[in-house]
Length: 67
Image (cartoon, rainbow, N blue to C red):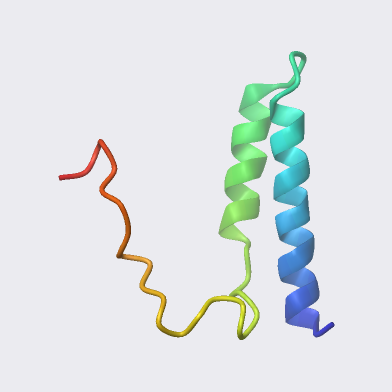
């Protein structure tokens, strides 16, 4: 696996583990929010080929808070 792929996979796994932690009844919500934001901001570019080239992130369903 390329170094960029390793970083991306490791960060996504950490976000998943943080999600499991945040669902616990004894979780610290402030910690989960801060670390989750930092992890999300540190996500590297996805490895080539992971997202189809014709994918437009602006397209999709309209959410209740939009429009």
